[in-house]
Image 1 (spheres, helix red, strand yellow):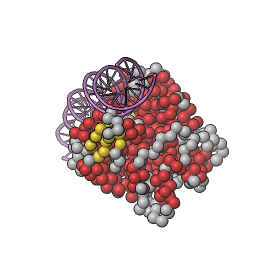
Image 2 (spheres, chains in turn cyan, green, purple, orange):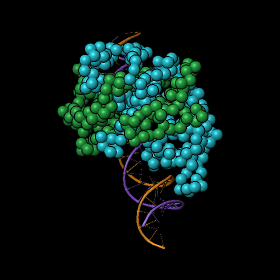
Image 3 (spheres, helix red, strand yellow):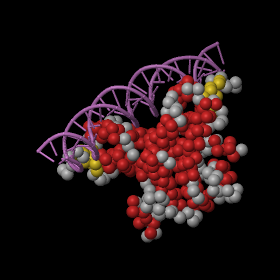
Image 4 (cartoon, chains in turn cyan, red, orange, yellow):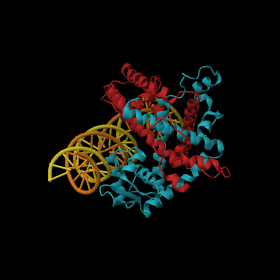
Length: 190
Length: 190
DNA sequence: GTAACTTACTTCAAATTTTGAAGTAAACTT
DNA sequence: AAGTTTACTTCAAAATTTGAAGTAAGTTAC
């Protein structure tokens, strides 16, 4: 059903808030003369990767700003991302690793800071005492809630109508696909 | 239940081709209840941001791997991204800053390493002697070409048909929009 | 013309984030 | 009971990023 939607009638808008065709002549040129679009790659691998890097940088600094506004000084944006990754469920460190493709020692380091700051609780699992169960404290949930509130404004700007919504979904799914392809390639070679 | 799903991680599956609606229960669930699509945001801000962070991490480690394969030891993935950002044009440091939303001192640092490694040339502009003109050397171009070659395989996997292509474009444009919104917010407040 | 200001970039030191090797302890295997 | 694997932590070093301060060239206003 989604599959269908992906391949049907999704017309690319020519102007999204100041982003217009003129900036990307190669894209529109291909589009108009619809000849052999099969082996002509329009948005390459690296263009997307660079875009992702830029957007990621933007978001991190946005997070930093929001946190400064909130008066949070003891943890940075990277740790905030970990909090958001935990969300409102209780999970083990291993599950958290999967959620963000983190490296183990990295998460351990963040979790230590978050625990010191009182943002999370860690309890050894009853079943398996090696496994630590992690969950947000009141304070951690509060920070997430505040960030989510601040984020609401962006959601309203970014998802104004059905078209926006559809594009956001497609972007999400496409990134997920990149994640899988790049991830598998890393493990097994392409 | 929906609430729960929103925070539950999307299962990473082993098969790339079997990417279907089942992986995004929250999206399809929302879609079916087509009564209030206006203020129900399906893919939120933070979900996208987390996805972007993960994908970015993946790509960086992929780059690292490729570079190790190529026997490049003197620069890391971040510097490679700078090389890719320069591309085949000659530009000033300022233009490069815009291309990647870098911080000035950061780029200066990278450019120094890249110049030391012989990947770029810097020449003071004739017009304005403050401004340094940057361009890839033979060696720099070679590295980019090699990376692009390696990337070709991913492009072929990722952009197999028209639908894929369209989705990649939409993803690109949507990310660009995020970039603008997040960037403007950082400068002027939302 | 020159003093004051702005631009374009660099330097440096410190903070933050990430990696990788080695360690611990619990659980599983044989 | 010994050896192996799993789940996580620790630590030190490396890589990346930031921010404040500096330099030198260009611009503007007297």
